[in-house]
Amino acid sequence: MVIEIDFNSDEAIYLQLTNQIIMGIATSRLQEGDSLPSVRQMADRVGINMHTVNKAYSLLRQEGFITIDRRRGAVIALDMDRLKAYEELKGYLKIALARGCCRSIPRDEVHKLIDEILDEYQEM
Picture 1: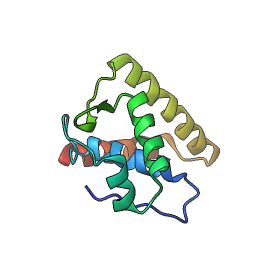
Picture 2: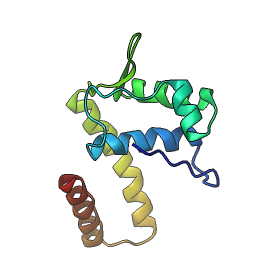
Picture 3: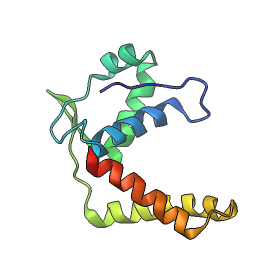
Picture 4: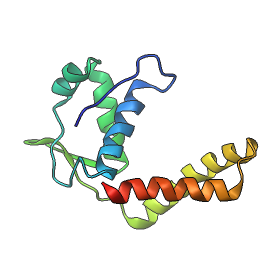
């Protein structure tokens, strides 16, 4: 999986890394049981500080996307229970939809956009 960091982005680097790994899982480029590079390897590969990678991996672990195994390192392990995942998604969607409402994006366009995004994931 190729990780691309936008150093000019307002989004924190650890969040960019976290989100790209989550997108890799969502698009099946990363599968349950796959090992991620070690903190040092990922930092070298992407050109960022090891502490930044460690922060991203810690967040992924807290959110239930990876486990940290002493022998294998960071491993994709989706152990989030469905209700917790649902509530997290609901929170993210509330914020995104509030932003859309503030910009007068119509309901039908929101539904169309969600369908397009879900279709992209199902095609992969």
